[in-house]
Amino acid sequence: MKPAIGAAAIGAAAVLAMALASAPLRAATASTPPAPGPMRELRFPAFADQTLSNGLRLIQIERHGEPAVSLRLLVPAGKLYEPAAKAGLAGAVADLLTQGTATRSAQQIAAAIDGVGGSLDAGSGPDFTSVSAAVTSDQLDLALELLADVVLHPNFPEGEIERWRRQSLSNLELQRADPGYLAEVSLQRLVFGAFPYGLPSAGTPESLRGLTRDDLVAFHRDHYLPNGAILAVVGDFRPATALAAVERVFGGWAKGAAPRPPALDLPAYPRRRVVVIDKPDAVQTQIRIGQAALAYTDPDYFTATVYGTVLGGGSSGRLFREIRIKRGLAYGAYSGFGEQLVSGSFAVRTSTKTASTVEALRVALDEIAAMGRAPVPAVELDEAKTFLNGAFPLEIESGGAVASRVLTALGYGLSRGFLDSYRDRISAVTPAEIQRFGAGRIHPESMVVVLVGNAAAFGPDLAKLLGPFETIPAADLDPLAPDLRRRTATAPAPRGPGG
Image (cartoon, rainbow, N blue to C red; front, side, top):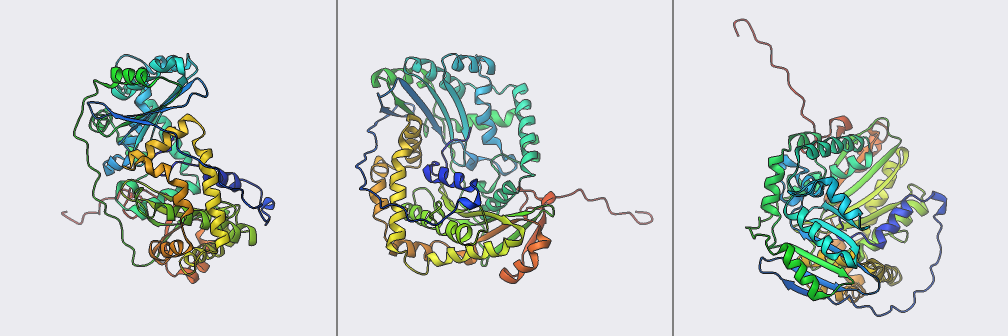
């Protein structure tokens, strides 16, 4: 499972973008949307906020429309805390939580939750690990018991570790053949350098082969702590009953010394860094353009959200209009921000046929630069804000979605006011703020550009547009290496006479 934690939760805008990316090209036609209706009043659901004696924070949100309860526990145990040589460790721990505890096997855990028609999942992101359960209301005690068991008492059986390792290595082998994956891991490594955000979440074959059970046990011991963790209970339940049940199963969870995130140290590029991952057999080019950007608590969060929507949040975004609709160069072109605890990222993503690689890249860079040169027209800005505010209610329809939203905000140190004021603060963003943000916080002249495709076919035109660039054969790409190049064993030098 991939939790919606670490970057902003995936919402309607992202779903729309993914749908459009797979739509046939001929479906893109310019049209005038109907005028938006008045925005209906919306207040985020009320919730109770309590802290247990061991530091575990409990959020209770009552929703009595249907007999169901969603649980989500957030723990600061993402890849932010991984050692550089142990890429994939946080994800391994999360994946193996449900694969055996001190008293239950993986099969018994699955049978217990499946037997009541529920679900139990765990996954790790850049900053946090999220463990979730969903059951009917009458099974709340069982869900809490299972949730506590997998979080507090995983035993990481050697057999399950090896099964996980084989499956993960097989997945990585498939991903290495995917140009989109190569583009993403290269971009994040170049943007974040040796900082943990730059390491691939799934690890590399070398790092996964090196993980031991002792590594998993130590990471769990040091990072799965109640102080800093937040549990959300959402749905049809009685608050007093839920509090008593939570105290019963989590009350014995012992506090610890929470680890601090490493100091932020990012690469500085005085000029644009252009890297081509060469795949001679490719008929399309994956294009990524990005830079380090906002932490989740950045004061420009709402301005950035609107900026990203205007530039590339969907089919009405400038990138989509210019690259797909006007020129037919790609099936989709999008931009967005990934806000995280220490630093976030901004990225433009598209793919195009090899012959149009440089043209699509040029248009994308031009559109980024244009956002900082002139104010966004009022009509265009209003359309973006209407879309965001209209999508927000859809993103909190289910109990799990509400829990995700609350935990994301509280996990990053924000208050309920962040949620209640979301639509008002989106509506308040002005053209001048968008231009100021585009000119001062976004830097196309020093961004990272990653292209994955047939370098020989587009290389000469790329050099004319951007000047010198680096080329790395796809087979030699190593996301853990400082220069992204896989090291090969060097044969010993021949010895001379008497040597």
